[in-house]
Image 1 (cartoon, rainbow, N blue to C red):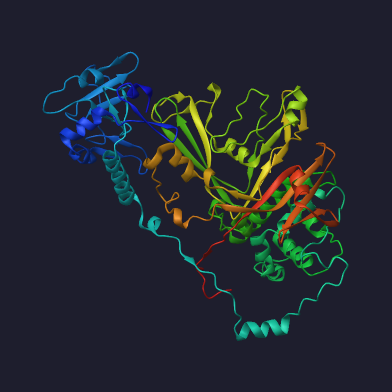
Image 2 (spheres, helix red, strand yellow):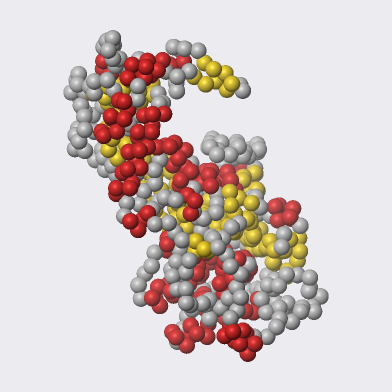
Amino acid sequence: MSSKINHHHQNDKTNGQIFPQPCPHLADFHARNGTKPFRAIQDCLHIKPPGGRAAIRRDSSEVPRCGVCGDSSCPRLYACMACAAVSCHVPPHSSHVAIHATKTSSACSHEIAVDVDRAELFCCACRDQVYDRDFDAAVVLAHTTSIIQSSKPENLRKRRRIDYRPWSPDLRERSLMVNNASPIDSMSSSNGDLPRGLRGLNNLGNTCFMNSVLQALFHTPPLRNYFLSDRHNRYYCQSKNGVRLCLACDLDTMFSAIFCGDRMPYSPAKFLYSWWRHASNLASYEQQDAHEFFISMLDGIHEKVEKDQHKPRSQGNGDCCIAHRVFSGILRSDVMCMACGFTSTTFDPCVDFSLDLEPNQGSSMKTSSTKSNHSCNCEADGMNSSQNCGISTLMGCLDRFTRPERLGSDQKFFCQQCQVRQESLKQMSIRKLPLVSCFHIKRFEHSSVRKMSRKVDRYLQFPLSLDMAPYLSSSILRSRFGNRFFPFDGDESNTLNEPSSEFELFAVVTHTGKLDAGHYVTYLRLSNKWYKCDDAWITEVNENTVRAAQGYMMFYVQKMLYYKASEKQGTS
């Protein structure tokens, strides 16, 4: 509430914070009329589209106009709560609603009005918005009714979850285990104290980019469990589809080799050849980008599934293939017209989050965060040094990724409500979290103007535990609209059924050196110990070594994985 209201009355000060007193005109309106006008106006509340902003209309096709000047294009039109007269408010020029407020009789007062396009209370005397719990309850009820009436029955069904039950083999499964399985021998090598599954990968010629990503994937819990439980059997796949390119089959082969107990470095030559066939434009012994390899490999697994099923399936659903079941999430993009407030929303699937490093304090760009108080303490002493000095945080990068961004005048979007191109405000958020979140830090910059590329060597702090709740669409929209935010059409409709937002770090891919002559190394977190995977060499390191490394890709897994009821209860 602005300072204009505070001039009318005293403020309360509690614990060092100043809270303005309730609007005296609203209190007088309550004393005269009670809550009956608020309940009566509920019939005039229209929610269009369902889940959108509430508006005051006697009829959905009604075009409200100012009763004094007859203008319908004013940015603010208000309807009097006492007599329903519509008046405009165009500060600082004219305020017909303020003139109307002077018409106060002994029977009723006209100071309280409602914004016809936003369904928000307005005090004409104070010339400011006011809050009333009873009025807000009427708006909330109208939102809820609109959602129930417009939602399809299948959208209201809750996703089923089942409790975890330990597996116990039946007689048939015991027979298969006895006849076809052999016990795992105890490891007798000098490195027998290392966890099973830690095995070096030979460098086949500038393939550290591939080895670093593969080490992270070998120890991605949902992906590891999928292949080690024989959910993709390479022998069955090849007998069914013939001997042809299948990156999932090659992954199955490598998982078997990595977790067999052998400590000798493994050569992923077969997988490299299959990947070259899939991404022929990257088939060379030159150094490649680890993030580009990660995206290309997941795309190869997904492409093979689409060919097998003869019809494309949405990546955003997360059920098309194992790659997207593990890594797929959904991003939400809101572009809001700054003239009328109309918002255009789009949803895009993603398999990782590419984040810009926070700008330096010495630069002119904004470094403050809306959700956290992380800062970069750096003094810029030159153009080149200012780009590489300083400290960024992963949370700060996420804050920057999800904060509102005003698009430039050359990026005006066509507003469907104004029917012209307008300046806009864009905000990204995460609608659906993946099981495993991969954060890619943009350390390689390419300038088409200067025709040069360089690497940003700035230090990045990253936590071992990460709460993604502040960056979810539901959290960001509620911070924007308060309790007026209502999801619709299955969009975060049941927060209790949403996956966990708590994540744990288990792998960090780092890059050292220059842009064209660098080296990739992976740090793995297993049983609360850190291990450095440098091609064929595996060594145990302390946590400080990992924190001091130059993080390029960070892999976080949900702390709590939920089980859902299978549609095929009879299958394994």
